[in-house]
Length: 164
Image (cartoon, rainbow, N blue to C red; front, top):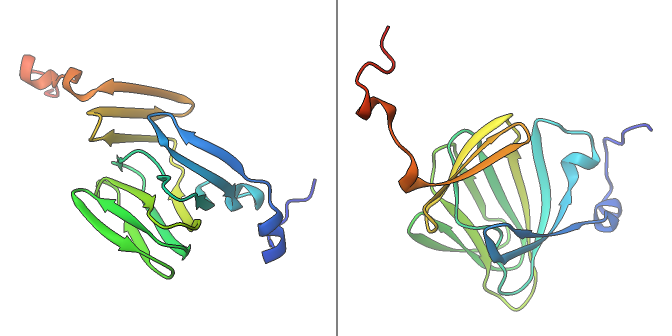
């Protein structure tokens, strides 16, 4: 099958989306259309995302390896960036460098909030969910979720770790 590299506005509108609920937050529900997948992109994800009134995009999280960006297409909501809450609306842009603020978006209006979300697809990433005190290690298809309090620093128990 020949991969299509151009999607018209009508094709994007008619693209079948996937309804997703975040595995750590039942209030994080969204309709996701992967524009990147539809055009064969493998190293970056580009998603048209719709949040219904009251829904969140995800559980508050931060990536340590991957960068992410959000452009607001239409609607109104709020973005949480660490402890700061900012109002967002059409034309607003959020850039999230690796190791940057923990983030999540919530639709605070009575109509859909539509976003364009772009992110890297690295083979490995580490992310924290600060409200839940959890860390996610992702490598290939393997995901390991651990309590941050259970993580140990081998250098503290053995000063020879990391020396030649």
